[in-house]
Image (cartoon, rainbow, N blue to C red):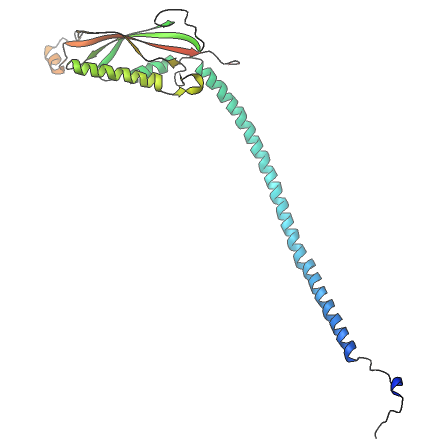
Amino acid sequence: MIEINLLPEELVPEPILSPPRMAVILAGVLVAGGLSFLIGKYYLVKIPVMDGEIKNRDAEIKNYKEQEKEVKEIERKLTTLQSKVDTLTNLMRSRIRYARLMDSLCNAVPEGVWFRSFNVRVGGSDSGTGQTPLGKRYTIALTGFIIGKDGLEREDRFKKLMDKLDEWFVKAYPDPSKNGVNTFLGARFDKPRLISKVVAKVPPPKEKDERLNKAMDVPEDGLDFSMTLSFEVPQKAPGT
């Protein structure tokens, strides 16, 4: 049977889910779903990740602070040790160490040269109180003998001796802040000064065996010399 709606058009009810209303509802559902997804992702993923990074950074900061404390403690110890080293260095520089001085003399002696006398006196070579702006002044008086096949070899050995003395005492371990003080010996040395140098007979050997003396080929003449080596000992630093 055919049904005919005889109601006026304005009285006919609209369908419950019309296409426009369906579109609006679907759009709202999609937007709500998207927002829910983003919010859920933020709370479930982003926030835990950020919390983990914050905890890691806090742990790093704590570790760095502990390391900073250790560094400061090490710096404090280094400062204390450096102070002790400076004190000992000043103390060492305030004294002449004769054992090292004798070692340096031995190292400065070339082949065919030996010292016969060694004397230390207060003051310079021209006497005096021995007090200088740097410290106490002393002079070492040395005499020695040089042998060689001829005069040329003896002179060459004497030059080597003077160069070695200059190298071991004047040029070795200089401290510019202390007017050129030899830090190994604790004094500032002047260049060695020659007093006299003459040709002399070689002292007779102790060995009485003529054949042995001939085999040693000892020269008859040698070079007898005397020289001085002056130095200044710095005054003690305050508190040492």
